[in-house]
Amino acid sequence: MDERYAIILAAGKGTRMKSKLYKVLHPVCGKPMVEHIMNRVEEVNPKDVITVVGHGADEVKAQLGTRSEYALQAEQLGTGHAVMQAADFLKEKKGTTLVISGDTPLLTSETLDQLFEYHQAKGASATILTAQADDPNGYGRILRDHVGIVDKIVEQKDATPEEARVKEINTGTYCFDNELLFETLEKLTTDNAQGEYYLTDIIEILKENEQIVAAYQTDDFEESIGVNDRMALAQANEIMRKRINQQHMRNGVSFIDPKTTYIDEGVKIGAETLIEPGVALKGKTTIGENCAITQNSQITDSVIEDQVTVKSSTIEKSVVHSQADVGPYAHLRPQAEVNQKVHIGNFVEIKNAVIGEKTKVGHLTYVGDATLGKEINVGCGTVFVNYDGKNKHHTTVGDYSFIGSGVNLVGPVNIASNSCLAAGSTITDDVYENDMAIARARQVNKEGYAKRLPFLQ
Ligand code: UD1
Ligand code: CA
Image 1 (cartoon, rainbow, N blue to C red):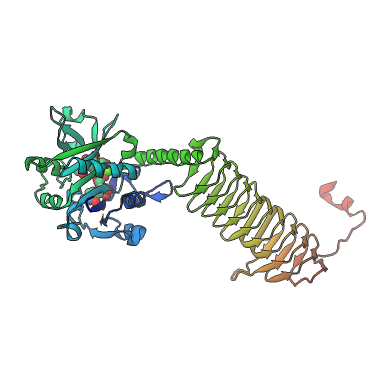
Image 2 (cartoon, rainbow, N blue to C red; image 1 turned 180 degrees about the vertical axis):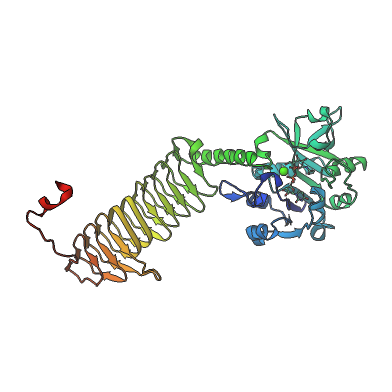
């Protein structure tokens, strides 16, 4: 097999996106488009990967890091000009170079592999990856001669009405003989409707030089969608979402309505888990087996172990251990660790806190900056008062303790195990093992006083 190289074109601004975010950084199912491309490119094992950057160069470099070398295209003079910028890295190397756009995030590595293989089998100098489009609008068209051999690619803006009717489109992905690619690039001109150095013109030049040009047509147009605007971005998301969800279903995950279930690429879900509509699973999230994630839950960068129920809740950067249940309408903020068989009920917020095994935090409670032991009962409306306006303070509660309803625990404070905090208490001092703390004003009953209240007359 020839040595493989890859050039990713990612210098364009993406004017049609009308966005401050550079086009190739727009996410599709949670990852920037250019990262999807990078992942696919790595799967076909190129020796070198050169990403051509320009608009948003620093941001694109920060995204891909050391996975690529970078060639700067200071001025965006067209796709041909962009490829020329990689000359310093690749020019005299022998092998096959894949050129791919940063805005075609749905291409699969299987298709890229097939493109390389077809290119080699045909002994071609260039092979274009093409597809049949129902609506070829916006793409370059593949023009073939009367026996079906590729003549050239014509851009939409340069096409005659007849050429524009052609439905075979250029996906913007190619394999080239590397040395010939850089030699031929020097012959490009800007004599076209957009006054740019079109990479696509290289096909005609190669043909004029008696080189073999091939076209490998994928049968899946959807794979080759180029994202130039937000309509195509939404479409790309929809297609990738469908792919991701189908893969989970193949692995034994149930969906009520996969169309309205939003799972980022890379999320892992165990078998027999049920995912209800409106659920979003984002970033680096793992869900175990036999879980139920009900309507509109949002889980980001979190680990949910087996047999957990999450009801309509939001979970960020947290861990929920097996057989726990969360919600409805709970919010686990970063660094919440909910241990086995814990019950987190409705309208409970937990932040930077560990909740020990079998502890129950049932209703309307805030637990921030705290360590709770096992089998504790936290009453309704309890607040861990962790912030004095300047600093955050930590509170601990030992195993088997009982916190009555409406208790404020003013941190820092330590509540030992087997202790009890009476309802309505504002706890500011440590409580020791087996003690009960009560910290509230005594009740006074004023006999007959209600009768004197004007609003009760
Ligand atoms: C290009 C092709 C078109 C093809 C389509 C497939 C050309 C002339 N046209 O059109 O035939 O059907 O892709 O999606 O190649 N870029 C740079 N520097 C530049 C210009 C572009 O790096 O100076 C990058 C962009 O960031 C983008 C890629 O190249 O990732 C393609 O550029 P774009 O402007 O989107 O080309 P299309 O008009 O879609
Ligand atoms: Ca494009």
